[in-house]
Image 1 (tube, rainbow, N blue to C red):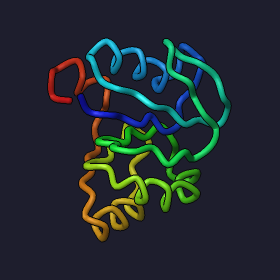
Image 2 (tube, rainbow, N blue to C red):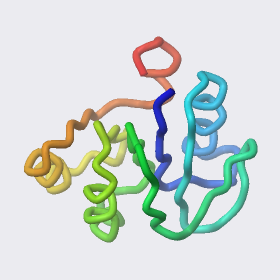
Image 3 (cartoon, rainbow, N blue to C red):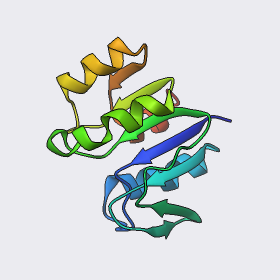
Image 4 (tube, rainbow, N blue to C red):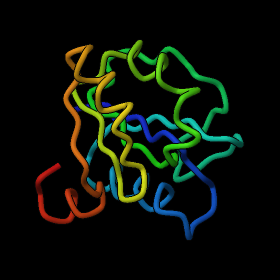
Length: 119
């Protein structure tokens, strides 16, 4: 089982990050979550702290480019295998930092990847 960090997680059921948590769990993925506000979604605690999670395979981003710089060092410190830039989160500056640190990335939609068995 791979561990996914949902970065930009929300307790609002209409937010894509919230839907992603539900779908990742349904797909059998282990999920951890960081958001602006703490809460619980489908049994997953959302922390507002940049926790030093171990064994993160994938970071799926739900944070817009202008709000991402505060997370750059955090994402790199987790040493994920990949970062998924969901629609609207694409960021060439972060693409370059990930390249420099040997972390792969893709501009894709986590929900589509899950729905087409490509996650």
